[in-house]
Image 1 (tube, rainbow, N blue to C red):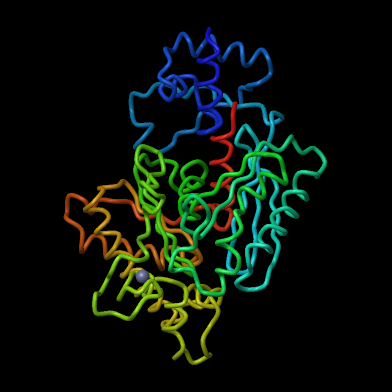
Image 2 (cartoon, protein in one colour; image 1 turned 180 degrees about the horizontal axis):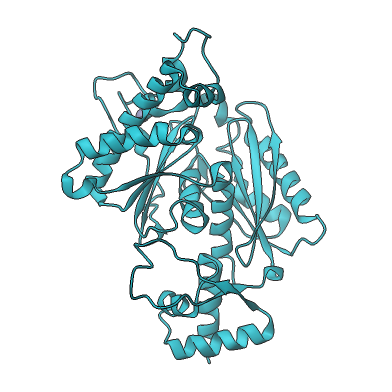
Length: 383
Ligand SMILES: [Zn+2]
């Protein structure tokens, strides 16, 4: 049994979480006999535990003829843990993930709207220290950041970043400063990519090999997952579907384009459409509540956002032929009131060959970003 085979098995368990010996063989490319030997040694040493049997992942993956479910193997949670951190417009949210992919506690810090990078650094350090000094915490292996920022050599805000949010973000290399202060590796990724990774591991995207995620939030973002891997593109810019034009003669977008999806399907667009609402312009929460209670204007605003989203989703179906479109972000809290119009719009607009796609709502809500950021870090730290 080689050290290389052991490292590959451990690395696969870190990246993908608990799996059967058969899946471990498939993911590592190692012969089943090698996997059997490697895992026996890892179980004997306590580095890996058997944690029950595999649950079906849905008809597309399980299917007939795949045999009986196997025993799941997971890395020992005591090997360490990572903290995933997501930056919202006025808060920082963190969540712990252990080496065995067990989801630990979380915490939130409220900050002023459009906070700067220095505040982000302080709040992150505060949250990480709070979570990692709790009783029973395993050693900290790394920190992952989910950012609504373009990623370059440093963190460079894209032109879509509101002016107020630029405060110090160009100058401060947040991952490097955190890594220096905490003494652990720090990774960063786009927030939609992080959400896609989390929905793939624990949420609504578990049954799918290929899907597109659309995040309908203050901004509109997205992610492309092919063969259960997030495809970020050459410079990390893949998935910016919020700036695909829905109507080239439509309203100006903050990116400088016209009629982008974001000006129809972002939270500000939905709230803006409801300035005529008899009760005055509602909050995002009130829109979801109103729609659920049958308020016709709230429902119409969500339907319009869903239909615009469906136009872009149909285009994505024709480009990529995914198994599913996964909706996340604040507007996805509307559930079927949003997903239904997206599905209808896709089936009307995409080629029949590509219109057979599941349109589902993410299952992890606000935890998707922090958990996906944590998972990326866990996959990247040395075994
Ligand atoms: Zn735009």
